[in-house]
Length: 132
Picture 1 (cartoon, rainbow, N blue to C red):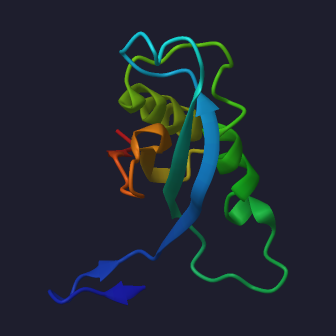
Picture 2 (cartoon, rainbow, N blue to C red):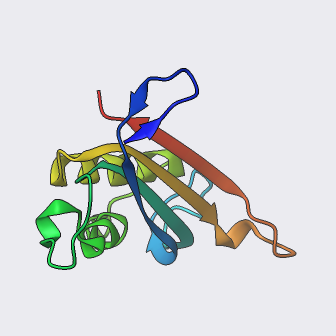
């Protein structure tokens, strides 16, 4: 355990991250956006309650499979479903991860709309939600 400055102890936390997945999603509000999927760059961070210590033979069940996180940001997004806002895409990813694993305490999803970039700027949103 880590000692906080106030002398109280805090549990260790594990942050799993997947960055820069490129996913085509049907999203947008303008007519030119609503017919074809748009390329989004999605990054996901999942804060987990975890074991105090990981031994060399610790099973995967003590953590979380990275592929589950990737699935939530890719194949779990229904093809053909239109999301008006990218915020709704982030909500969908967060809901999927919370349903997958009770150890997930907080999820952060960052989405960049690649089609809006003119000079390499990153235009998008970051949504963070803690488990209720």
